[in-house]
Structure formats: C-alpha cells, structure tokens
Length: 446
Image (cartoon, rainbow, N blue to C red; front, side, top):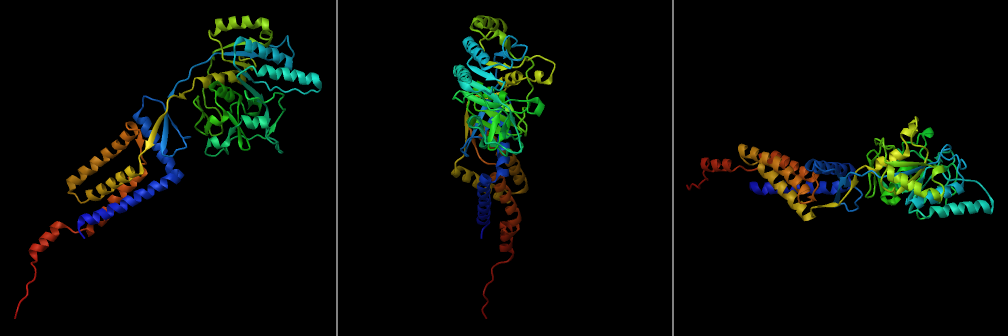
C-alpha cells in the first residue's frame, strides 16, 4: 500500500474521532459548559470595549444569542413614609380607609406603580369591614402595577402555597442548575386582605430579624418567590415572573431589564446607592386631595421629574443597619445596573461545513509528519497561529461559530496516529536504494 493511501486512512480515522466528539459535546454537560466558557472568553477578549451577555436561555442549541449591555439610569421615586410618627394624624397601624386616601393621593400626583412594603392584612367581620376592603381594592386598581408584600416563614407543617403567591412566583425551571441552596419557606404568617388582580404582584417582605433582608428570592416548593425590591424592579421593567431567569452564584436577569448579581444562596451582591433620587412625604402630608398640589410642587423642587413609582415604606434615614440598607436604596441600585440592548445571533456552522473543516484538519495533521524537519516545524507554527485566529474571526467577524473540542481531538488524533504509524509507512528513498543495490534476478540456463 502506498504512503499517501495509508495517510488518508489515518486521516479518516481522525475525522471519525472528531465527529464522535462533536456528538458527545451536544449531550455531555461538562464539555458543553467548557465550550460555552471558551466561547464567552474569546468573545469578550476580542471585544474588550463592550460589556456583553451570552444569553443561555436561547432554546435553539445551534444559535448563541449575544447581547451588548448598557448602563441603567437612576429614576426618581416618591416615598410616602408610613411609620408611627409620620402617620400621627391617622390611625396606626394604618386602617383600610387611611390606605385608601394615600393610594388616591399618589395616583392623583401621577404615579403609575404602587409598591407597599407593609403587609396589608386586617381581621374583621360584617358588611362594614367588607366594604372597607372593597374600597381599598378599588383604589389599587387605578395603578398599572401594584406590589404587595406578605410575611413568610418555615414551619414543621407546611401549608399549600396560596394561589396569589403561585401566580406571582418565578418558575423553578427558570433557574440554571440546582435550587438546593435557596432558603425555603412553607407558610404565610398572616393572610393578605388584598384581592389578586391582573395588575398585582405579591412578594415577600425582607426582614432583618430573620435574616431575609439581603435575599432576592425564596423557595416555596417548586416556586420561587421574589423579594419586595426585586418585585418592584420587575414592575419597573414591565416583565412577568416567567421572564426572570436565574443563575445562582452569578446573576438574576429581568428579561430585557437589569442584570442583578446574586450569590449561590440568592442574596443580592450589589453596593447599594447611598443617595437615591427620591422625595419623602409623610403619610399625614399625603392623604387628602387638597395636598396633591403641594406634593407636586415639592417633587418639582426636589427631584425635578414626576416619579413613575410611589413607595410606601418606613423612614429612610436613621442609625440602624436596616435604614442604611433600605429597600429604596436597593431598588435605586437595581435601576443603575447594566441591561441588555440589541440582539446578536451567532449561528453555528452547518454540519457539512463542520465535517469539511474537521476533514481538512485531519489530512493536514496526517501529512505534516511526513514533511522534512524544517518544513514540518514551519507547518506546526502556522497551524498554531492560523487555526485559533480562524476560529476567533469566525466568532467575531462572521458571527458563525463551531465547537473547539472536535477540532482539537481531530488534530491530536491525526498527529498521534501519523507519528506512531510513520515507521510502518514505505519510504521512497529506501525503495530506490534497494532497487539499485539489488537488481532483479535472471534465469540461468544450463
């Protein structure tokens, strides 16, 4: 068998190895994760001037979506303080009729999102109590979005998750990887008195005393409950719970909204804004319709723009750690986080082109061994430089990509086979010398 036929057979074996690695990389998660990390590293290194996000939620495995990120901007807020001192002329805790007046006031000012940190829960019977709650719920329907909180805990005997919490929960399937590290809850401390409507989003109230003040999410069975600051950010970005995608230990992505860093336990990993842009009004100053113009004037003088959201919470300033890390500071920080802009689709090479590429690599790896020493080392150098450069250009310029592991496996297999089998290949020089030294035998007749 001639030398080039043997080398083609070895190249074909190397090509088969590359194809097998291609099939393996589709289903073997460790190899697929390595490919994703290498793709992202090459992309970010070649475009250092940009902040990029590789969207892993893309369902098509042959298309990788890359989204450049832009910095967010601070938004003004109207905070209506509802602590005991701020509501001295009203009931405390506030009664449904007090909240009714506060909600109408905020809507008249021009706010379209209402976020209530205090759980709205009252016990009572009779038509009068039902009528008070009905008026309160009617006032909430004026807003485009309403964020309400409930207090959650974990008990030895769990409850069935309420329907309003289930409708507001993030599907557990939206978490990349396991959700075992999340803190779990299974009970509502006090049932809410608020009706669940299409504009209502329920969340859990962060509580420093039980260690949930830094958490972005909690787990209730197969549902992920957002915290109050996260739910407000979702409302600001106008996204549903199904559009929230979570990568524990990395980030939490709010659809086309902010990318929020979190740790493996679901806690925020952000440096909170020290001076959020807001106007604070006491509950007693934001109750009656006659005070609407005063509030608008104060907004113009303080923040200069009409807030889209009103936050009903405790006083921001104060000596306690909770005051320094208030929900308003968390919400204002999320507003400034990077968010995806346009969409870039990087399509994988067709199967035919991938086979042709692997075939060329296999043939080159098999033929290089048979070259003279100087030419062989020159080919090694060219391959070392040209092959990575080719792949980088594919990623950057043409927006096409291919797997790296099959190319590496093909080249290594072809090179090793050629090296090991070179001793068995016929040598032209040796065959020529043998033909000159040993002429063919001739027949001698007696």
